[in-house]
Every structure is written in structure tokens, then in C-alpha cells.
Length: 236
Ligand code: 5GP
Image (cartoon, rainbow, N blue to C red):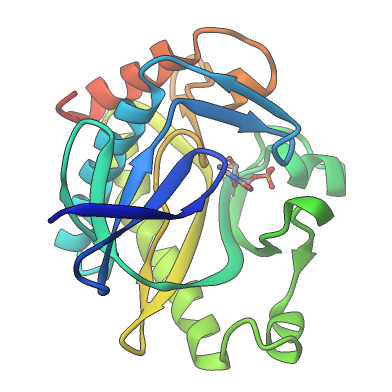
């Protein structure tokens, strides 16, 4: 399918139209951002690694019965996906306390969370992605109640699949962020799942293998992403 004009450029991906208005091309760039886009750097090969990583995860989720926007890989940096209307909230599940939860509530970093915590955030860099709840989503019309329930249920289903997938490869899925969209009146998982939007720790050493290496200036960012990909069997 031919790639046409650019429709949108996000912080790490760009979206292009195709001849078929039901599908768009997602192009994964090497841009790596932190702190709501205040810091951006190019990390060589990140676009390709995240595109292939995301394709692998989306395929695993589809096999487990989770509806996703992913259609197929088109090239090293590009994938074909459904052209969805995105719901402007981020869905976060936390299995272990870290990041903003620790800063907000003063709980210990690394504390196991049982049951896992679910949080909604508004996608808005200018407002620093504030936490919102189901009342905000209903009042401001960001999604229907039915869509909210569906997003929550699917986000927890993803947890069951991916916690095991990473555990089997010696890693802890600490937390992750998902985004959903609507295509032909149905809710689908959209955006991407990659080490840019989750926390993964080595189960033995608790070494960070995700974007926190970039956020915290720990170095070895791409090497960590490659290690995760290789451990779970992503063909790079
Ligand atoms: P926190 O709220 O602790 O900053 O983030 C929780 C989880 O969601 C982390 O895995 C983090 O990577 C992911 N996350 C939250 N907001 C964003 C975002 O705006 N972009 C990306 N890529 N990931 C996010």
C-alpha cells in the first residue's frame, strides 16, 4: 500500500495516509523524548528496534484475543495500522511501585502492588499529562462509559499476557502505558508497546532495561532495548 502525505507527527512516531482511508502508516523515528518532550535526543536504531518490538508484542496480544490496530510490518521503521480515532487518555497499570506513583504517594520504589494499580492520565504535554479519573473522562466527553470499561478490561488482559511473557524471559513488567482508539465503533489497542512506554527490570538484579535508562541518564539505552528484544525472541 502506498504511503501518502504525513497526517501527524508525534514525539517518536509519524503517521502517514495511505490510498485506503481505513489504514495509515506508522513510522517509528529515532527521536527519544523525556519530561513531556522537554528533552529530545536521537538514539540510532531506536525506531527500527521499537517498530519490530511493537510488531512482535501486538502479534502476541492478538493471539491472546486482544483487538489491536496492528496489521503488518512494512519496513524496518514502518508498520501498517488501522486508522483510528484515538481516545486522548493513557491507561497505566502498575505491578510494582516506581516513577510517578512513588513521587506522588511516597511509597517505596520496588514495592509489589497487589492488586495492581490502574490509573488514567490525560494526553496533554502542555499540562504534563495530569492524572484524571472516570468522572473527568465522562464529563469532558473523552470516551463513553462503555469505552472506559473496555479500555480497563483490555489493559488488565494485556497485563496477564505480558507479565508472563516477560517473566518467562527473566524480567519483571513493573508498569506500562497503553493508548486505545476507536475503529468502526469498536475499541482497539493503538499506539505502541515498547521499552519506551513500560518499565522492565531484570528479575535477578533489578537492572532497568527500559526508557528510565534515558530519563535517568544511565546510558546503554539501545543496548538494553536490544537485550529485552533478544530475550523475548523479537527478530531484529
Ligand atoms: P509514570 O506515571 O510512572 O511516569 O509512568 C508509568 C508508566 O507509563 C511508565 O512505564 C512510563 O514509561 C509510561 N508512560 C507514562 N506516560 C508516558 C508517556 O507520555 N509516554 C511514554 N512513552 N510512556 C509513558
